[in-house]
Image (cartoon, rainbow, N blue to C red; front, top):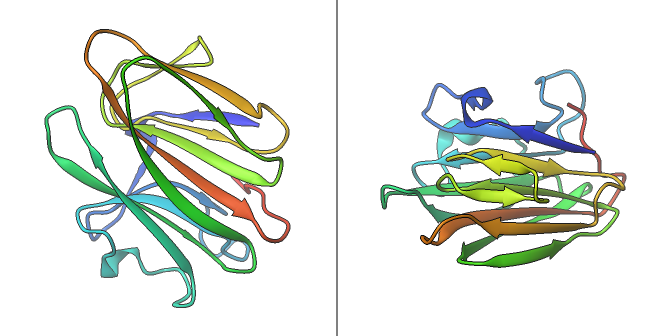
Length: 163
């Protein structure tokens, strides 16, 4: 499954964080598995609905105006191991993922073309899960490099996304 999440659809939290995606995305509906959010600081108290024993990975993403936002990926240890990779893309890049891995691509500025058909704007996200696709081609449009974050949630259990 692939889902394109535009920046204006992300959930703003009361403490200033922005939730990009979570499983489940409706709190209290099912047992929490993971979430990915943007924060002013790597870990804030506002971003604490997860259990204290959750695994956390962070990375600082450069935005088009030169400012930074922290990408925070958290997961329940029984579900996934999170990681955040930060890239500066000037040409093309192919990302690969496993069947039991949820991957999100978040861009810091407009100009990222995914799979030759999805144009991502500032802080847009593409979520990939399940068996489609395993290889994801990215291409920077224009002369300026594109900053992006690649978030991986490697399944340790029955990982999925409950949107």
